[in-house]
Image (cartoon, rainbow, N blue to C red; front, side, top):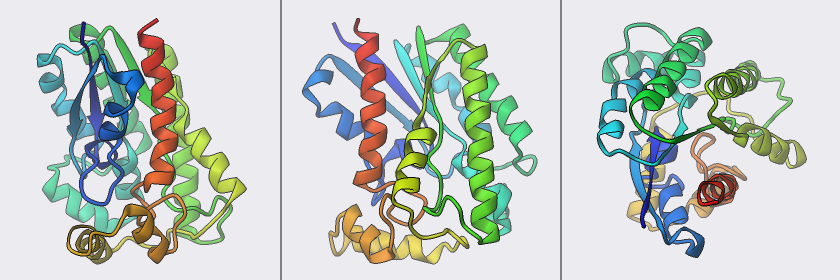
Length: 244
């Protein structure tokens, strides 16, 4: 009997281009031979956008849903150029905030509970940048928001009786043990350059990340294989629990 798992989120779920392909990693593991994975990841999505796509998830009648969303909410809060682009491309009615994120996340979970999955896992977010004690203003703000969003996600998971997947905590420990670069500004051009490296030069995400000076990321935002395997291993624990 096939057990269907839908994964809902943004680029970390979509796994396109140089970003770590989480779903392919999970699907190829022998322990997951009885699972069918559905990819509901859309690059650039915020929690508001994921909420609009819940009916598409519900229509597939999954047994479980893995929800990982919010990184773009944080980026649009910190960087004005990101907000300016996302406001148009993602049709946002307001600038993101922790309060609005919380409203949207709770609505997603409640809609899924009412109409779809038997079991829901909510994943806390890996930090952008790799300097947990940075003196840079942007990285400090990012660090504070990722910690705050992790608390929001954990609280909603507890109150809505969903499974909390502590990826923020796991990732934070890793960058504390091996700190790296601060993420100081958001520029779109380097992402296009990395895409060319991936598709034209056929470089791996690890190679691109190394060239960019990152340990766990490709570009300071998207996970490379080293960072992505941390997430895959945590989700493996959730998947194993569903089959008990």
